[in-house]
Image 1 (spheres, rainbow, N blue to C red):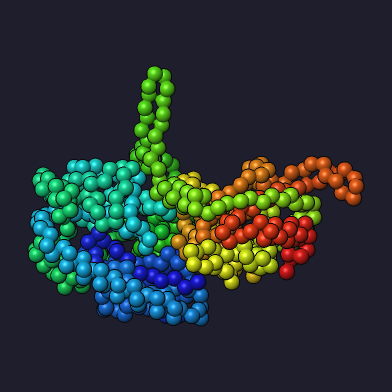
Image 2: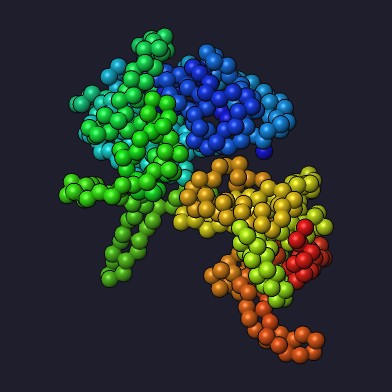
Length: 549
């Protein structure tokens, strides 16, 4: 499915970007971590990497052209895919955005803005994803009074999808922290103030509280930005020169130039980036460098063993009263999103539940035979997903969504698979599951689940489900009910396979059964419709040969 790539905000003061150079052409294959283009900001020329895989279908901004942050930069999707609808849909919101920007400018014309000294820089809450509206400071890695250099990591910012490092684009001293650890703030609100040591910023803090602080409130600031833009070539040259010194800087304890994705993978694997030789432009460390790195055997020195360790990002407050204690853990953005979504579903959608028990003897025998094939390893959950996809095709009423004016019948069958992650729960989506065989479902589910636990799923991979499967059988749970994943009309809860006495052909024998519970939204799915769906699902699972197509 085609994805719109917007002009990123590569610095806290960036309002528009200029494409200095495209490193990919229309028709080129793009992998996650590839450098798409070099973007000129108001501060420097920076590489912009892709967080999506596919083919570059469209370039929206030509080399040398400028465009506002969040406007269409490119489109990536499947080769030959029709993306005309995205272009048409993008044009209308763009004009609306411009209108809003004009009105915003008119609204602020009557505001008395406080002058920001030339030696002070206001750092605002960054927008770390297209959908981010606010962020939570998980951990501050610098304290007030600390010296800051460009490229230093200031803090870890938590969104509803992931926790990401936020680096400084300024040099100076950290004079003020505007958002404390565990607190949330909207995008573009004051995060910190950096400037010359000893500078009095109390007037700026008061102006921010009164809503009269803007990062470009003085004429001198604007002149400085224009000057920096006209001197892009020299800035770019300086960036490239410092990048080429990557190897020597690494050995001297200087900044290591690596893509954000490379840094994330290295951190997850516990790899020291200083030991990796970058293969990217000017020695930049990229994704494949980290993935292909093989550490050499070294003797740990005392200096290495005493390296500081990153502290946990959770904000914890303890209370002790008369021998009793309560621990208060600040809710993460993901936990808040889960609470809001499931509360809306439970309180607004009239749930009812249907239960059925399935004979799994044939499924067990079939899975054993299937897994004897080379490079094949399917799970019972894969068989359930395949059976659901086929049953949804026969019962389209279940593959629907409710709206106030109409019931939406989805022609596509996209099955969401609930995955538990350390911070909560995510639902990656298996697109067009009815067109996949069981082995293809297994491969995709494993990949999505692994990347979900590593917080590497894109927003697109977690959207668009028309039905959801939640499986707790691996924990020994025999039966449970789930809350519907809106805007789906139903969710299937899958229990454990239990060996127990069953009656077959009038005889009591040992059998294997599994309990399924279907939660339905009564606004779109009636009892009889849900019951017929479960009967069809039961037939497929008890006769797996019908699903081998």
